[in-house]
Amino acid sequence: MKKGIIAIIALGILGVIVVGWYVSTNNKLVDMKGQATKQWANVESSYQRRSDLIGNLVKTVQGAADFERETLTAVIEARAKATSTSIDANNITPEQLAEFQQAQTGLSSALSRLLVTVERYPDIKANQNFLELQSQLEGTENRINVERNRFNDLAGEYNIKIQQIPTNIVASMANFDPMALFKSDAGSEDVPEVDFEFN
Image (cartoon, rainbow, N blue to C red; front, side, top):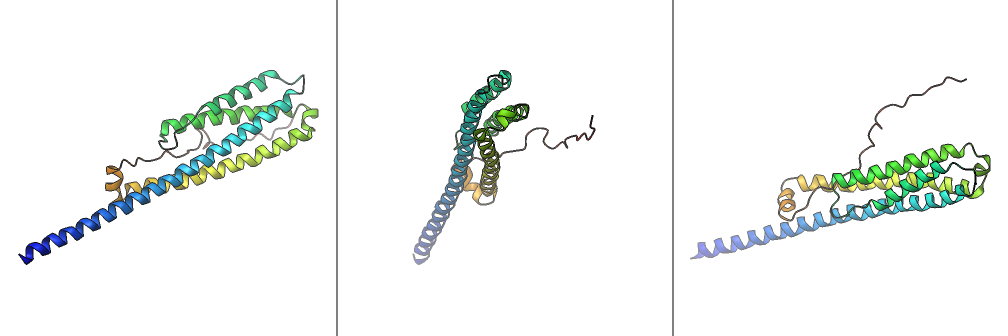
């Protein structure tokens, strides 16, 4: 009789320990995913700031009547595409992130062409509003990089945690899926050619 009671008490204690471990592990994963999701909002906020600045930059450049309309149109279209591409922060898949990143890269390319084209327009280059917006854009690009790296750090830690034993048991039971990470743009690993020939 005593052995039976001791066995029941031991099983009860073991049950409490297992349930406590499960709850604790689940809460840790919820916290880690929540931190990564919150950081994703910071990434989106930085991209939104860039989009807003680009809109103001385009308006400033449009004031130059003879400015190349094709270049402006490319920036406006790329900005529209970049702002229409959104991701569910609770379910960031590699495909969604690749689409988002491709839209942002398209906007960066169009913006780069715009800034190169502006070099041929001294009136725009000397415009104080343009210079201030250009400076803010440079700072925002740096901020985007920092926020993306922070997101990758948090999401990467979460991804590692859900694969570790025994946490992977809870992750599997509670449907904690890996989060996609930012990767470099295609071709960014290639060293750019530098031509020092002067005419």
